Length: 128
Image (cartoon, rainbow, N blue to C red; front, side, top):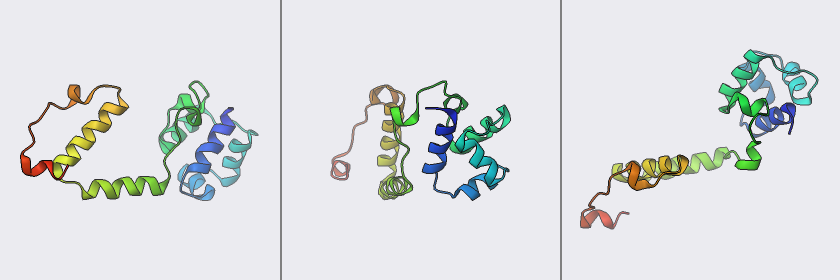
């Protein structure tokens, strides 16, 4: 996958329009279109700005690391909103366990290494 294809992938999956993305990056929509089609290559400062905007590494944009779709798909806005809704319904203890579990999954460590084993009172077992 080329740099222009990666930029196209990021723009396509972003919830904002191309015009808004270009505005947020302080470039014209035509300039963004040129990056997407490969007619122009972004300079180092723009690669950095795009990486921060799309929350990916500059190495991803520069094709140094594998393509995102080869490793994972970016979540949709609906998926993120669903996850946030679920999180908001949790008790404080459930939230803490959930966050530590996610940390363990992302960093490939067992949950016991991140969160000490806790005794859960009987009345709380029903909630979990």
